[in-house]
Image (cartoon, rainbow, N blue to C red; front, side, top):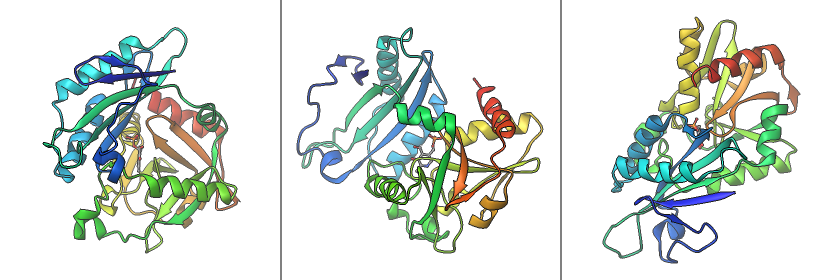
Length: 282
Ligand SMILES: Cc1ncc(COP(=O)(O)O)c(C=O)c1O
């Protein structure tokens, strides 16, 4: 199932072409996006996603349509979605720099689609990950802002290539590492560890995306008496942790059962507690 809306709230046929061949989003991956989980008609963390969309656009010196326009497009998609048949929807907000040599008007749309069977399987069964080098060091984000390390841009070809490499190595997912060996994030997720009564994630200052899902989980965890830490994490710590998860909007909180071929302590009860903590926010 697919539903496609423009920012004036009109619905368009998702099977029909929408972009021009000279759109800079197509030609250079020059644009920003967000992917939002909508459950039973309610978008999760919409404000945080729109904040991040605006932040990404600022990093790209791009003009973004008004927030009210995005909200209208979100409503158009969610109003049209058949909630009785499908209770979850992956909603993508996309904004490109517009056409090459144009007047700077961005191309923008909101697109909703069903979750894949593969994703639902990974949610239920957990995942194996391989660590792959990302080729950046922890200070790079500040030193080289033009690398857009903390922006959610449309240039995800490297992230997708890493996932294909994981598949070649027989794993489901990737955890990127920095040049000093520290853990960064997944190609489309943040890494979360449980160590005793503390939940840990890696710092956005290392050049990763600040996750809305990880943020929601840590908010719930703090309220429930967990301690939370945002700090550099070595790969070795993944092996020793009480639990490791990849967190992102559409996957929610997925348990990692294997890192680089070595089985982890994947306690189903702890996974249940962490999932319930996250769900308690909604
Ligand atoms: C590179 C990257 N890091 C982290 C995340 C997790 O972000 P969120 O929880 O807001 O979906 C994503 C989401 O797609 C991502 O692409």
